[in-house]
Image 1 (cartoon, rainbow, N blue to C red):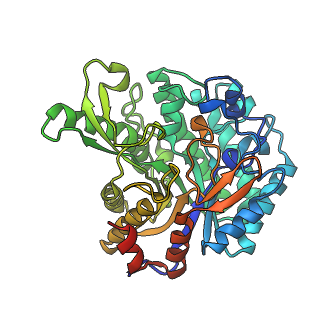
Image 2 (cartoon, rainbow, N blue to C red; image 1 turned 180 degrees about the horizontal axis):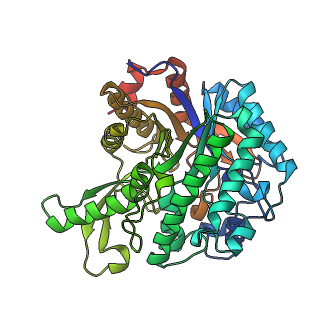
Length: 436
C-alpha cells in the first residue's frame, strides 16, 4: 500500500471550451469553421453539454462517485466579456452555479482564467501579440475574482503558455495559425506580463488566494545519449519549452530573443504554487535538414497508426525527475493535468490508461517520499471532450462520451482511480495488476 498525505486533492480537469459547447464568441469557434483545421472536420458543437443542458451537475455527481474531492475547470473569457468592457451577468451567474455545485458536493475548485481561447473581440485586436492585452487580462481577472472569489481559493491564470504560443505562432495548428518564431517569443513575453498583472490583481481582491500557472512540462531525452549533438538539442528544447516562461516567474528576467536581460520586476515571485501538466517524454535526434523544427527529428514511440500525433514515450520516471527539480523552489506543487488517451481497449497493450495512471501515481508517491510537496493531482479528463485540433478523436476521459446521445460510460480507469481516491493510497493489488 502506497499512501498519500492527508488532505491530498484527488480530482480531474476540464476546460470550458472543451466541455461547455456552443461557445460562439471566441477565436476557437471561428477556427473550427475552416475545413482542415480540426481532424475529421470535427467541431466543438454541443461538446459535453455543460452550457445549455448544465450537465456539469451530473458530471460532478460522477466525479463524486469516484471519490474525487476536487475539480479543475476554466471560466470562459468570451462568455464573461463577450464585447470589450461589457460584462455578461448571466455568464457570471452560470459560473456561480458551477462552483456552487462543486462546493455542495464537498469538492475543492481550482479555476483557470485562460485555457487557450480568446474572445473574438480580443483576437481581432491581435490577442497576445501586443502589450495592449495586459490591462484587458488584468481587468478580466479582477472581475472574475470579485464575482466568484467567495467560492474559490485556487486560481490558474494561464494554462500551458508555451503550448499556446508554440501551436498558435510557430506550428500554426492553433489560432491564429501563425508561423513566425519571433512573434511567438513576443507573445510568450506578453503572457508573462499578463500573468504578473493578473497575479497582483487577484491578490488585491483576495489576499489569501493561491495563484499559479499550469505549466506543460515535457521531458526530453537524446535519441542517442552518446551523441553530443542530440544532447545539445535536447538541452535547447528543454530550455525553450520548460524553463523560459517558468524562470521569468521566479526572478522576473526575460530570456527570450529580442528581450534577453529585460527585467520585469512585477513578474518575480508570482507563483504561490507550481502547476505541472505532464504527459510524455520526447526522444529527439539532431537533423540538419529540419531547421524549421529546431533541427529536430522526433523518434516516435511504438504507437498504433491511429494514435494522436502528439503521442510520445510513456516514461513515469520523467515525471518523478520534474517533481524533484521543482521542489527546489519551495512551493506547493499540484499536478494540474496527467492522463492518457484511449485507443479502443483498456488496458491497451502495455500502455493502457490504467497502467499509465498507476505508474505515474507511483512516481508521484515516490517523489513525496523524497520530500517533494505534491499536494494534489487532477486527471485529464473527467469525460471525453473536444480535444482542440484533434477534435473528438483523442479520448482521455475517465468516462467515454457518446456525443449524439450524451451518455457517459465508465472506463476501467474510472474504477481504478475511484479506489485510489477512496483509500488515499495505491492498493497492493492494483500495483500488482497495473504497476509493472
